[in-house]
Image (spheres, rainbow, N blue to C red):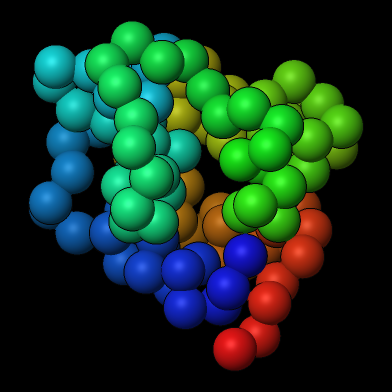
Length: 110
């Protein structure tokens, strides 16, 4: 993932532009944190889609070894933080910023 995309994702999560939703990348009511990443990256997503595929994970430099972007500890996965723990986008952005290497495997510095 390019650092500029990562920073734009954090900015988007902290903005009021995206309403948070759960269980899908995008719903009629909003987005999950990964859906926001797709929007920021300019990726086409459709309503009801539940996650990123392996190719997209690799494009974003994310770990694909677990179930849809699970970090080494599934309690801290982005899916879990958004859908199960219902952390706010701001809280998720703070987690990503504090420990990006748990989520992003490869940063492409521009």
